[in-house]
Image 1: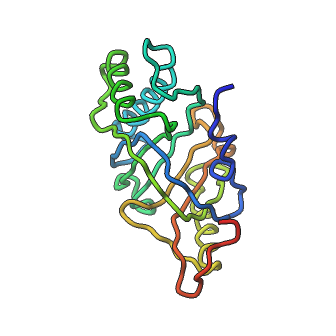
Image 2: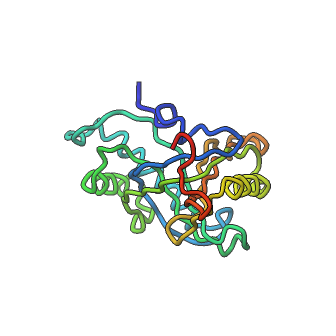
Length: 214
């Protein structure tokens, strides 16, 4: 059976709809940066199409003449997004869209996937896609169930949990509001959408111990 990251790493992809802490390890992603409202931005649409196109090109590289060294079949992981200016007007959003990649994906494998996708989808702009190792570290997370527009109450519960635990938000230019999309909005009614919301944290002055289980 193909390796499924969601099933193998349940602590990262199956949090409950109540806040909890998690220590997020280093992972390899294909990333694309952009800005603007994701509902109307052509850049965002291009980014999502590119991320999935490259991920499936890598998945299907098993059928190539020279499959990548260390290749194993896998289920393409879910789309994720890092969001700056998340509580302001959607047109001012700055985002990084990304999809996790297996460990065998090197820069060479990535460039080969770009060449393959460019032949199949010449209209896609692949120039902004990059391969990067991202280490998020200590975070608090929660699963939001429902419409994206209803996230503020879930975010408030998550941030309240962080404050009550004597931790602090650790937002920086690199580490910010993080969403992992477990359901396809094109195929799922808004009230059944499932989205992991993850916020980076650091130990507060009052608390010098890591949370239980981290």
